[in-house]
Length: 242
Image (cartoon, rainbow, N blue to C red; front, side):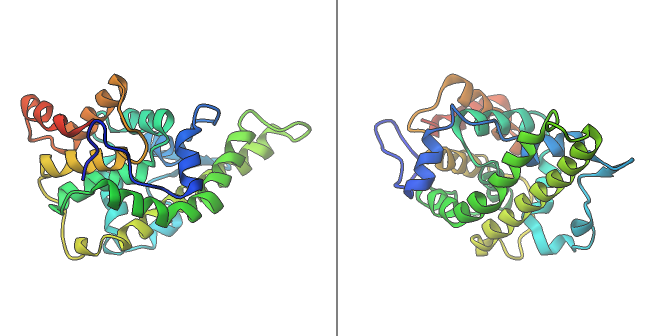
């Protein structure tokens, strides 16, 4: 069930718990988010659209419905700054926030905190082994490395960014496999109540209570997920957020 005041979040593995409660001393993780916000990355002397790296060009959209949805929904007003805020302030996995939006667009049952914790545990090893090390290397290389020509280190850093984005896509494959009820469904008008409950379920594994800024970010995501809903309906749906 979505977290409510006085209700403890579901138990996570020690490693995941440590990541969720020790964010203040870590470098913000833009990764997929800020790369998508620019629409492209520099590679060598050219500009490569980030929305269509070689591996994605070779894929049929039906092979990764969640990823296709992500590439569409990320451009909606308010999504980018809101998911970045929740990532940096709460340690939230952006892919789980996007999954909550996807579930609502497919009309799936809402994501409970237990389900969110289970999905987070499924991608924990991949994030620790691949995504986070790639992000750490890319971040450390920002601004250059001593005794290495700037153009050489920057070119390599941009290649690492592409690998990081690909690793985020692979995480979504894992999450999609954990959502078999999505098979054969196409995104449609999102169910406001489902998205709100799913966002609450995801955030419950990172925070027992939300700050005002967190709530503003979540409201922006909810409004973007359900553009047909008026402001009053969105505000009413926010009552499930602790």
